[in-house]
Length: 592
Image 1 (cartoon, helix red, strand yellow):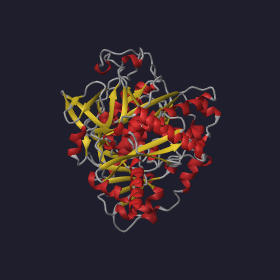
Image 2 (cartoon, rainbow, N blue to C red):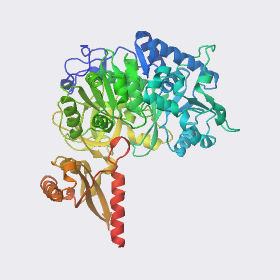
Image 3 (cartoon, rainbow, N blue to C red):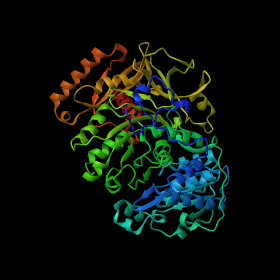
Image 4 (spheres, one colour):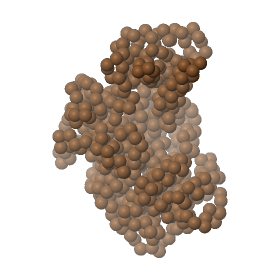
């Protein structure tokens, strides 16, 4: 098993790379970059900027920043922010389209001892308000084209200054020929005077603040202080704000380098920086290891392929649904297609069907890029596991990255379960979260000390196979009791998905009069949709397969064919919406 590495062997000086039972999957060599993670995020980037000074760090359309130039912009804007009352300990919210501003501000704020909370662009007003008060945020860097929609709301937050970012702050005139950059500019046409209200936060333009005559300011943040905050509802089951330290970010960049290596690559990420994979893995790992980060200029959740054709990246990073949508669009031109050396799938488990579809797409062109499937959660600072290339079994989670340890535990006992039994996936990583803001109970639920080591309980259920590979069984939130046994919908869904003619499915419990029924929404393949004979045959096949392969309490009571399954953002099936729909239908039938 070889990822991108550079023939550097396991090093005895690094205790995280001691041989373990998973070493056979890593191959003979493991690349570990030679940098000290025990620094602030800014200091770690500064070290990389000196090391790779003349390499290209960022590309935004046709505008390119070398590492030396990017460091200069960061240093200057750190002085600008300090001159505008950003102090050590300040918390700044960032919510804007993907532009250089986010990257420059993140490292600049860290340099002067301030932390950052990335907020999903176009979030509901109450999300901004809740976050603003939870963080006691003093400043916000906001996207200019939607400011009018939110400006009244910002008057009711602790934010004192809003800095509006425009693509023209950094793009070149020649970028007008780029349709994505043109779209950015077309949404930014207004006069700054028109948005300054008589009260509330001061509103200023990013470019207008910029000055070169300010003295250098530096208050390096302690590596164990919160450097960045992300929203997460994964491990604890509640929506929380996760605190990530500089040490964790740097440790993530160090262990994730195992997948990328150190020869320069052009990295394109579909994942925004308000998600941990977008910042911790895609951006910070890229920059600390001397690669080029290509800024995605496409509209949110659109997969036109234009940026792929324009940038011609070596590596593409995205959620499984993003990658398959890109492939399905068939808009990547041959030259760009041939340049893709690896595809990183993360944030959700890629199904075997999607893996084979992507592989078949490239095989049709005589190409075979690596498809690297990753697993991790925000609480582990993104990546913790990967799936070996040759592993194609259903519901596989993978094996730990070098330096990470995985156990299956009983959270009620803080102890490992018997090998092969199902329990909660627990991760010991050099990049754990510090905890949640204002949610101590949830922090103690997720962060556990087991035998003197800190573990993150992911909330995902799984088990370890005989060969040391881990498998996914569902989430704790979806497990229910029926007939005296725990039922894992994932087992039911895996059984049905493996049947020829089934594209996807979702099993949900429905309760009535104290009894549990299991109803399954099945999305058949396209050729079955308008053929009743084939649908009836498929239904019989599903029922017979479930009776043979599932124990009685797990056998579904009802199957419903649906042309499509509702999904959450980035392709996860929205099982809560499906359950709600089924419950409403049951209530209507009962009323009638």
